[in-house]
Each structure stands twice: as structure tokens, then as C-alpha cells.
Length: 437
Image (cartoon, rainbow, N blue to C red; front, side, top):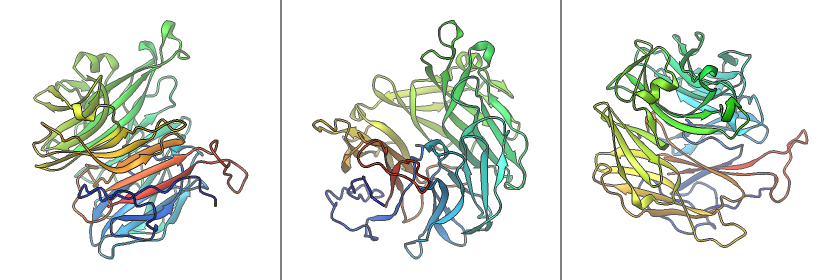
């Protein structure tokens, strides 16, 4: 299969050491870079594509969608330092990046995938910590609406929670959660958690992040609202975007605002605004010691912390111009931000950028100028995504292992260069998934 992507250099990301120009290094397993040349459509930022689980085996699991729009799963064995052969799990519901699967490992070791854009398709491994065989596909949520952005979490009681958008990008598409009391065998009808409502101007939700906090027993949520009302209530007008932070307590099935106010079973736009939930455009979230830290982008990048019912924020001038950033709190003296910074590149590719790591040793108070990990990532021919490893069942970005930390993704549209076609003649997106240690 002809590949229109350019192999980029590798980076030792867990230690934050730049490897420089290594384009000549073969893709066989090197000391600092692991790649199985996986391909598929773009996996969305922030959702769980790479998860770490330590049970009887220490493994990191990866889900992706291949050229033929099949849901695939592979895993990295930390003890053997090897990648397992990829396994086909299911067919994707549509040929679009929205259907890229999320992956999850429950407390018993069963591996789950969730792919959406239409009915959510749920697959579960037949045996714990074994991706070779899978149970028949289950459907989650209503089957008469397009569903997308699945975010799985498990409570200490063993209930699986699946957060997602109930509807399409247009119209009223609220934030919903489905619950399974038996680790995915059955699913209770969805509950609407945030509903913007057609009578208030229809809005739809895009989930930025969802993380369960063991200390507080709540799920921290960052969501984007696409306000489709427009002038005169027209949903065809250019939408307005807002970002909100809120919490969900699964023990009492209620929503709570940033300032601590009880918003009831379902929160409205007015309730979120009245209780200090709006944020500048949020980039990412991480949990540390029971507090939510929010990476936000206004006129300048800011880092904020939610504590005592208030949001305290401070500026991050060294991140000026950065994009697609991810916040990773590795330890007391090791806070990190990964993202792309525009590089000085002449036309016709003015959108190239460098993959950069910024670090803080004083709990986020000050940050260095950034270390370039991968130079000249071509962002002009498609999309580039970043997904840091997450740790079920809370889905926090916490890692204790020696395997891949970052899933580095490049996607290239078939409209650029030689056209790529699937076996049925349809065009598709060429994608490289690169696993960086």
C-alpha cells in the first residue's frame, strides 16, 4: 500500500530527551521508539486510545481504526518489551474519524472498546488481559440518534459509566451517561446530565475530558458547547462556542458546578453560567491531589486550578503560539505539557510545527521554554493528534511503567498527493500511529 506520509523522527518522551533527526532509523523496535506501522483514520485528541493496566500482566493497550474501517486492538507487553499482533475486534459504524474507538480496561482486567457516530458499539474481551478473543458486539444507548465522543470510567463499586454526546453536532444534543452494573453485560437507559434545550437555543456538547477522582468520588468534566441558536434562532448560522467545567457524582446521580452548587440531576446552560462554570477555551485537564487543573487558551495560555469553589489561574507565556496541548502531572516535581509550536517553514507548507515538551518543577508556577522532541511535523496535509497514556479505571493521566507514554498520530487526506482507495473503491485517510517511549 503506497504511503504518502513522511516518517518523522523519534523521541524519548518519558525522560524528555530529544533524539534529533532520526529519519533513517528503521521502524523495527529501537531503544527509544516503537512502531508497528499501524494505519487508520484520525483518532480524536483527549479520548482514551492508549491505556496502561497492571494486573497479572503489565501491559499498555491501544485501539485504532484501520484502512478498512475495522476496530483494531493491540497491546505492548512491558515484561517482554514487545508489541502483540493486532486483532480485529469489530467494524466501525462509519468511515470517519468520529468513529475511532476508545479503549478501556476494567478492574477485573477485561478489555473494552467503544466506537460511535450512530449507535455506540461496545466490545468486551472474553478473558481478562487477553485481546485474542472477543464477545459479540453490544449496542449502547438509543439507536435512533447519532452518538459520539464516548468516554468510559469505572466507579469503585464496579459500575461502568459511559459519557457521550446524545445527538449530532446540530440541534439539541446533550451530555448523557449510560451505566452498566455488570461491567458491560447490560446497560441502563441513558441519563441526560447537561441539556441546553431547544427553548433556550439548541446546543450540542463536545466532551473535552472526563476523569474520575478517587479522593472526592466525583467525575470531573470539561465540555464544549456549540450554541446552534444563532441570530433569530437559526441553527444554520455560524455557531458560537463556550467551554464549561462541572462535576458529576455517580453515588447520588447529581451534577455540581465549579463553585460547588448542586445543579440537580440535569444542569442547564443558565445554571452553568450562573455558577461560574464558563472557562476560556479549554485545552486539557489533569487531576492532582483531588483538584482539577485546567489548561486553558484565551489570548494567552493559562493554567487554572479548581479549589474551594473558585478557579485560580495564571499565565503561561512560554506556551505562546502552541496548539493541541496536553497536560500531564507526572509527580510533585515533574509537571509536563506536550503540544505543537509553529516552526518557521516556508510555503507551500506554512502549517508545519514542532512537537514540544514544556516542564515545571514547582507545581506549575513556572515553566521552561520548551524542548523540541520532533521537528517539522507536517500539519499542512491533514491532522496531527496527541494522546497520552491513561490509567483505568479512573482514566487519569498517571503512569508507572516503561512502555509507550505518547500516541503520536499523523493523518493525511486522500485529496493530497496520490489518491488512496480501499478494496471497495472508496477513498480513505492514511494515518500513522507512532508510539513514543
